[in-house]
Image 1 (cartoon, rainbow, N blue to C red):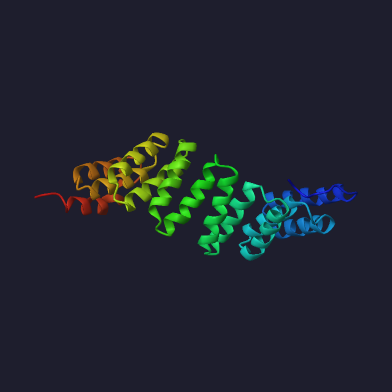
Image 2: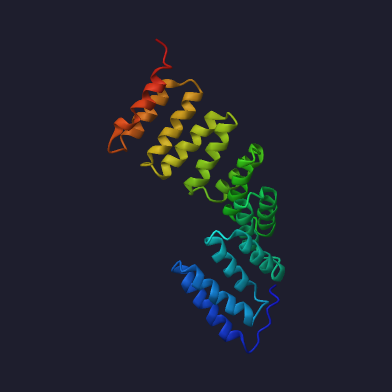
Length: 232
């Protein structure tokens, strides 16, 4: 639980916090920082004030300052999963991937039914080439929310790296059922067929992609690449 103890300053601090949120929503980040800082000066032990300022620093790409505020919010409220997810994103952007994975894992430990937490950890594992772990994370994200095309597409990318091309094709079929007008998914599917040596199927996917473009001639080079691999 939060260690926040209401005082006579609460109402004024809340006003500053609300102003900060309003400025944040308007993307007036320096002004938002000033308001959140005023709130913190009045009440230093409210974790959301620190968290809101951290989000603002993060939006300004001031990552080290964001981490400090995230750490303070976690110190004050160590059982809030979103705080760990947020600091994980900051660590990831700082290139501190081990800390990022640790933070995302803590978020998952606290709330194991949030697909974004698995997705975020999966992205880090993917970049670290921990493909088995990434696949587990994306599998879980898809299990928790099978209607988000991005989760499915990221799993496709892992499957391609692992050489599981048939599974990758099935994922693109799923993604296309969700967003049938996404030409890039047809092209992604063509890459999997090409890896399997199924060049006619790959060409058909490129043709399907072309039907969704105002100028299908932009795919001519891609078609020529595949056609060059067809048996004479």
